[in-house]
Length: 283
Image (cartoon, rainbow, N blue to C red; front, side):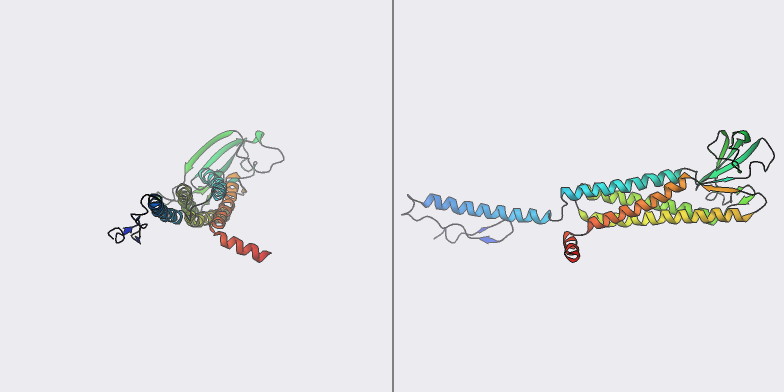
């Protein structure tokens, strides 16, 4: 009678009735196995509750296939980041050169610059290709002198071959490049969290960061090109030839790659049900 009124609670606070107590007559026969069976059933119920709880906590964990796809998309984004850092950190964005016979000397000057500094290089006319009209290219051997622009320190505009740069456009392009680099760092942190915590949720902010960084990189490129055209139109006393160089190409490729990487992260963040509906709709 006392055993029948005894109640047991499980791990989640719910009341569970234990197995029936063995009678005196059945004590010598199957009472022991029945009691052990009831205890085993209670223990199995506890393990089931715990198993369901564990399955609920890991329901949004990524699979090995998803992890491999995320790492592949992250590699694509890292390529864009490396190209951006290479382009922003170097000064071979554009080359400016007058005609090689403009000064009538055995040497002629050529200049190349980027977002942060400009370099003037003195080249020997004899080393230049005879079929080339302008002085250059800047890769030739010669004496070079590089100085940082003073946009952010004293607010002065740079003067190149008696032409003045557009300070606002140059500062805007430089600030956009810094903002894009900051977004790349935030996106990389989100991907690292997604891989370490095994949560697909972090892919959505990472995709936004990489797409925005790619757009800002392309805007930086466009503003820089506008600043170059404004520089060339500021003064016509010295005729100049201009050529956009490899640093600008790196930045352009980086912007496209970052946008593609962000789109890949966005696609990987979509639930499987969305992909199934798209497949059924296509079929």
